[in-house]
Structure formats: C-alpha cells, structure tokens
Image (tube, rainbow, N blue to C red; front, side, top):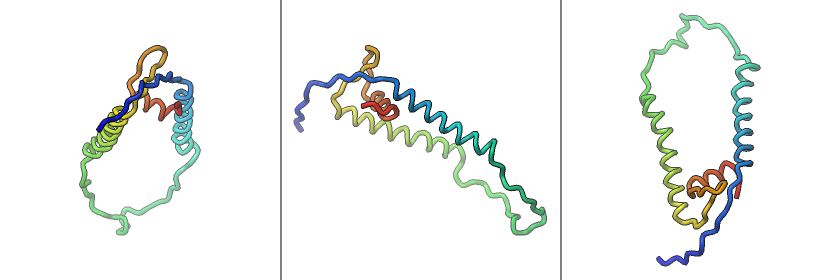
Length: 117
C-alpha cells in the first residue's frame, strides 16, 4: 500500500484549556463526594436479629478482588495505549510545548482532555 505522505504540520499546544478542564473536573468530583457525605443523611431504621427474611449465610465472592482491580486497571490502559499507538502511526502532525517536542500519543491525550485542536 503506497501512501503519499506530506510534510508534517507543526502545531503548538497550549496548557490553558487543559488546566481549566482539570480544575473544573476537580471541582465537580469534590462536589460529588462532599455533598452526599456532609449534607445527605441515610435513612435509619431498625431491624431484628431474629428476622428470618434477612438471615442468609455468608458467601465468598466468585471473582477475587485482586482480579477485579487488575482487570479494571490494565484492560482499559492496554486498549488506550494500542489505539493511540495505531493512531500515531497514521497521523503526520508534530506537536511542541514551550519549544519541546511532544510525542503524538501524549499530544492526542492532551488534546482530548484539554479540548485543544
């Protein structure tokens, strides 16, 4: 397969929108955590220890916790890295920030979270 490759375009990235999005996300997460914890109270009601409807034997979990943590952290990371490596092989743009060259994987992540194009 013969692709005609043009001269790569050089683009400068700005950190302003990335920092703004990070701060807005931090504020949102803070409110999501703090509002329920400090302003909402759970409904408390009593129960009886001899109530047969709530007495069930303890069952071990089928999937161990370490397997869940490992799979939830590694599988998305592997998919993201493979996708970005593939995308970086197809894109011919060069990025820099304050005079330093930035790899396409980091630049695409920066554009995604910062909203820069």
